[in-house]
Each structure stands twice: as C-alpha cells, then as structure tokens.
Length: 362
Ligand SMILES: [Zn+2]
Ligand SMILES: [Zn+2]
Image (cartoon, rainbow, N blue to C red; front, top):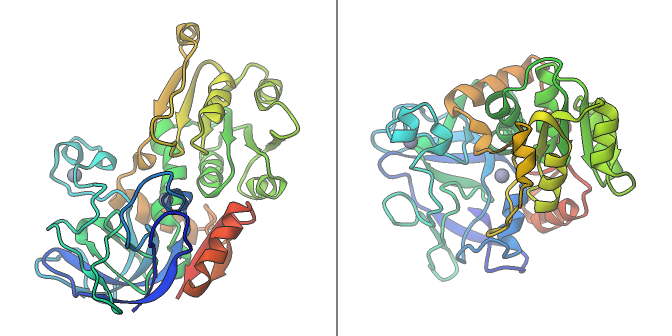
C-alpha cells in the first residue's frame, strides 16, 4: 500500500510503498476513506514532540473494515468505523469508573499492543513504528479493536474523518467537560479544527453570547458559520477587554483551543467570578502557567480536558447522528481535500492558517 512515511523531524513526509500485515488477535484492518491533518501531527513532524522514525503518523480518520483478527466481536468486514485517538478498553479502573477518556490502554506506544509492528518499508524491509495505535496516513491501517468505533453506514464515511479527534474533543469539551448550559456566556480562544468544534458545541447547547477569538479573519468568519455570535480579532483588539465588554462581567466559560500558555492566561483572565477556563489544546511539554491565587478566591476554576471527556461508543455515534440531523457541521470543517501524494502541501496550508481542516481522501 501507499503511505506517507515520517523519516524524522523537519523533513517532508515521503510517499512510499509499505507492506502491512493482516490483523492479529483483537485487531482490525481498516481501509482508510479519509484522514484529517491535526495540529498534533504537525507537532510531531516539527519535532516539538518526539516520535521515533521511520513511522506512519495520522490519527484522525474514518474508513471501512476490510478484515478482522481472531476474537474481534464489535465489527465485521464492511462496517463503517471512526478511529478514536483514546481507546476504551472497558475494563481498566478509569473505564470502570465511567471515565474512558482516561483509559489505561491509551499509550504513547510506538508499537501494537503485543510490542510488534504490522508495518514495513517495501524497499528495504525496515520495520515502521506505529502512531497512537492508528497510523492513518496510509491506504490501510491496522488498529486494536478498542481504538475503533462502529458508526451508521448511511453517512458519507470520508466526511466522518474529523469526528474521532477534532469534533469529539471540541464538542465534548463543552458537553462533557464544562457541561455548559443554555444562556451561559462562552469565549473560545483559537478557531482551528478543535476551536470551531467548541464553538459549535456551545451553539448546540444554546450558550450566549459565543465569542470567538483568533488572529486570522477567515477563521473568525468560519467561527461565525459555526455559531459564534461575536468575533474578536486578537491581533487588533485586546481579547480580555473585549470579552469583558461583550459579557458585561466576564465569561462563564472560556476555552483555550490553542494550547498556548499566553492564550490560556487570556482565557482565564476573561472569566467572570465563578467562571471556568478549560484547557483543550495540547501545549508543549513542560509549559507552565502561573495563576493569581486571589482569583481562585473568586471561585474561578481552571480545568484540564482529556479528549473532550468523551465516552467514545456513546459520543461518536451521537455526533454522526447530529451531523445527519444537521445539528452539527462536518462538511464545512473540511476546507480542502488532498490526495495522499499532496500531504506536505496540505500541511503547508494548515501552517498558513488557510484551512479549518485539510483532509486526505482516498
Ligand atoms: Zn488530533
Ligand atoms: Zn480502559
């Protein structure tokens, strides 16, 4: 099969022929229909987070089951599936406690669960490392059964590629993590793939106002399409002052969808008394944010968020239902599609802020 191979930081991904082994016990082979380019993938390509090479990156994807290994019961060939970045094993202490988004089976492992790889370079037989148990920048992926979620097959499968990362994280941060209720004010800092989904999550629950903050005007225009009621270009206006001006007393909820310490500070400073700031974005390793402890006296909260606090087997099918019912947008999230051969070009357009999501389709 063809795959985009990562040979080390700050090098373009190389389109190469890769051999993929059939699925072993508890594993599933999926033909990829679409795979989104997430900023986290870029962090690995740019070496901000380390990952061993050669490997196949990519973790936001949807496709059709081609083959199942022994013992697989939840899917069969022909089923439409979405990959979940955080798997759900169902039996670890976190899954058992109703927090599958913290599942112990989620690992930064470079290999499949049994410690081996299913991928090798055809030209020299070298083994390739896996990525988050998914490795979707390829025509096919082998994943553990616990990393995939069966979805209804009347939704266009390539359009579902963003659901398992950007959508479940952004919408989930509003529904599950912050539990925003109707009429509450929400400020969203950063209107990329995740931020737009925070905006549409806020719109879904009837929050008001929904203030979108970004430095790029076309992302703000997208945020408006996704339900933002007020737009703030933070390159021109002070976002904290603007949020206070719009809300009168500060936001009930503020989301950092960038993963930047300064942006988190702006989100926290935008809060009303009793408000909650949620860190949704992935920040660089070791980044630290200092809190003015007096603000905690005002019952302000700062909370983390893992994978939209999602229960994948509940939330992912629900998001697909909401998409088909036209209650959430997925088509508009995909600004452009590219063939696998143009993946580096697709990353360039992401870096330039030209796209909400660029998606590779097959
Ligand atoms: Zn992602
Ligand atoms: Zn678990």
